[in-house]
Structure formats: structure tokens, C-alpha cells
Length: 127
Image (cartoon, rainbow, N blue to C red):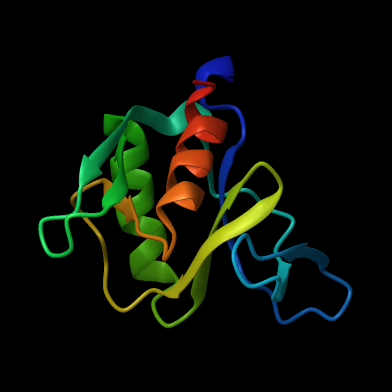
């Protein structure tokens, strides 16, 4: 695994009552997550901090490697309707339903507080 993005993982929220529990970055909400890591930091091609065109606040732009892009498209098609969690540094930074297959290989993280987005970016990139 690339040490550059080692603290990043995508996992599904689990319905298993014995699933490992992770707390949310912003709210402290607890999420039971599948033990299977669907994608990890080694699947990331690029991570950038960009301004959100709608709000002007920063967001994290994540681009997947080619093989991971195909894998993510299949996974989002297969798990449509389930909740996908982005885990960084052992905390859930975003949990959202999968509404449709995602074929672009691009993920974006938006958080309420600018200092949180900068901290998450630093955890993912090591900067």
C-alpha cells in the first residue's frame, strides 16, 4: 500500500450487530462497518484540495486509478441502495447512500467546517 494515502478506506455500513463500530468525524455518530475494505489508499491516483464551485469552501477531490475505477463502478452497481462510508484515520468522514453506479472514478468529500476538511486532507495525504 502506498504510504502516501494509507489512512483512507471505503467500507459499506453493515447491518450485522457484531460489526466493528467507527465514530463520525464531525457528529460523533456511530457506524457499524463491514470488515471488508472495498478500496484503500493504494487505489487512489490523485488527492487534491479544491474550491467547491457552489459554496467556495474547500472540498477534497479523490481520483481513482484505472483498475480501481472499474472496480468502484462494479461495486456501486452491485451495492446500490447501501450506505458507503469513507473512513480516514479510523473515523467516518462521510457516509452516504449509493444512488447509482458511479463510473467516473471521482469522489468528493464536502464537510461543514473548513478546518475539518483541511485536517482530513492532511490525514489522507500526510501533508
